[in-house]
Image (cartoon, rainbow, N blue to C red; front, side, top):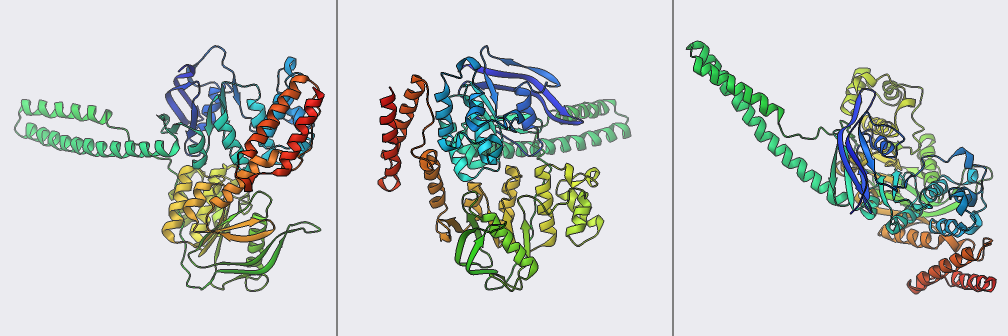
Amino acid sequence: MSILLQCHRLSHAMGTKSLFENLELAINAGDRIGLVGHNGCGKSTLLAVLSNVLSPDEGDISRTTGLLLETVEQFIDPALMNLNLFEALRKKLPEEERDFSEYKAVVLLQQLGFVEAEFGHQVSELSGGQQNRLMFARAVINEPNLILFDEPTNHLDLKTLVIFEDFLKSLSAAYILISHDRQFLDAVTDRTLFLRDQRIYSFNQPFSDARNRLDEQDASAAATLRVEERKIRDLKASAKRLAIWGKVYDNEKIARKAKSMEKRVVKLEESKTFVTRGSGLKLDLEVRQSHANRMLQIENHVVHSPGNPPKSLFSIADMYIRPGDRVALLGHNGAGKTTLIRAMIDQYRNDPALGPVKFNPQCDIGYYDQELDMLDPERSIVETLMDNCSGSENQFKTALIKAGFPYLDMDKKVAVLSGGEKARLMFLIIRLNQPNFLILDEPTNHIDIQGKEELESQILEAQATVLITSHDRRFVDIIADRYLVIDHGRLEEISDPREFYDSERVIALDSPESESPHATLELETEEAVLGRIVELERLLQEDLARKPKFQKPDLQAGWRSEIAALNDQL
């Protein structure tokens, strides 16, 4: 297997914080790598070094001749904002290829879930998810042999996540992707790199299997270290005794023996087995129990969109949450999940006993807002706790230190915190207030895998009553025992979240043509026409291969009609 890129003794620091030291790493052709680590460990910095955006403090990188490396852009280039979607992608092609390679842009946009009616939309008018898909398309259209992805799944709805997942599985290029989505990593990677303790741990396995191996290594290292430290303690005690005896009895031989043992202790200390220090971050939740019959009840209610005039989003015939229920609220982006949650919070704050959303008088809510709007950017970390919790400044500082915030950072303003730090601050507020009902709107957006696992453990151990929204399928599967889905204008309960996941996968597969089955981009060259015919025939065969209830006869008719029209052009 050919090596595309190799790192030799790479070291890099940010200010006084060392991110990685003497790092050795080889990336091979065809590698599908997940890069994992806690927030702030240096993952994004490592990708910047690999892509030559940053120079390492020490070490060097060997790159194979002919390496074509692309990085998925973090933000849309402002120069693209006034272009339409198709032109923004076409512009990424080499200038000499643009006219005869247009079909590549057409096929790629369709594979990434765009309908042809959207090709003329201005980039500035695209949603965040659509802009993410465009950045993905721009990274892959020239068929690079290595692609670097920095958290490509952040803030994506399930439909777009499924599109990315299926596309990555079909990609021939090697890639490294940073992600905190465990199910996504398991689906699209076959090698995992853990960046921690300023070093890399590499396993030729997807995330979950690699994580088990890493845990086994950690347990073995900890056991070995305990044996080594016991041996060092025994040697130190023996050396001390011999030194005393040598002095008391004026015995030079015993004194030399004591010094020899002391030198051996020094060598053993220097060669002790390394055990991970961990991230230093900690996420804790404490909740109180409630003995109420029901925490929440909504009957015969229609949820409307904000704005004027409001628009009907979906209806609720009967929704209830009992103490101890762990409820996942599912639905595609724009279905109204966050709108419902905000309506609940508004009702709770204004009058919890009246109105369509009724809370039990015993209900005490801990609310996590996905936009983190509760946090005032101009307040310090300590002031934020004082604003939202009861207690003394010293108590708050102690709580912050236990949560992994250094003492010297106590006066930091919220504005300069990372997304992960803000999320942990929000959870600390919830813990200090000890509510009995958690409403968590996309709580996993800003936290790393360790944070997710801690949150899962805390919720389950506390037997918390919780309502969550999340695009993280693994998180939903572990936490929830009830599932509510917004679908076709109604809120309904389903028994298994896979019913929703499967429906979103079908929608994602059908979406390129579902909104505009007869829309046709002007294809001026014969090669473009042939490329379009090949793509339409593939879509037709894939749809015919599905179970009859999932097939789309109207789309099939549209595809056949377009194939016939394109054949006439030839």
